Image (cartoon, rainbow, N blue to C red; front, side, top):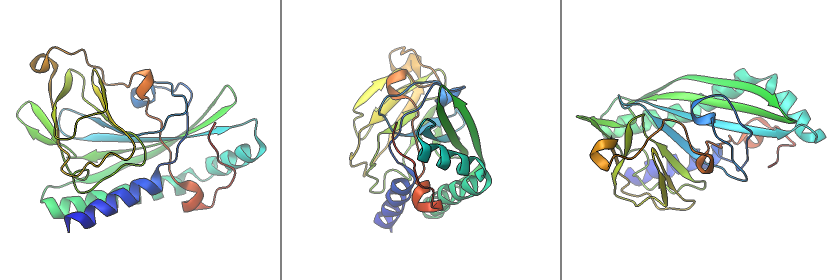
Length: 232
């Protein structure tokens, strides 16, 4: 059953994530700039809830990209619904198997343009993703059950927190941000986040630094039949 959940998570994330790059955006996980980067980013809150954000970018000087962007912009409700369904499927399965209530809500889509680039950002709230243990947060499922990301997996601590311990060593850490690279076997994954003063006084921030921007994308070509999307 655990292995089955791991395959489900890996399959859903693989379907959701496609490499891309974004331009500077508004706040939170969108605060950074990335070049030829993609990632699955989870931003935690100190109550154990989390925000998952995905962004798609389109080169508006390319006719096929422009057409795909225009079509997507006209159907954001459909895209948001599919995004919500996929995340909810993982959350519901995980909650059932570990005995801790989880839910996905507030799925949203934002469409912006800047400097010839169209950006579609999908986001959702995931309740009780992390275990709250006193002043510490522990992230395990759904990532511990055989999850092997095909894009960098980035975990962002709440303000004032830092990574204290992890069962699978991160490939890089910077303040509030820890990253595990493509193909990392996260079986048995467990990451503990604690107040920064308890882990060496590391300076933390709730937004991602430039090298670890939240650059994400959903597999909309496969899901919705959109053509013309490509990496910038």
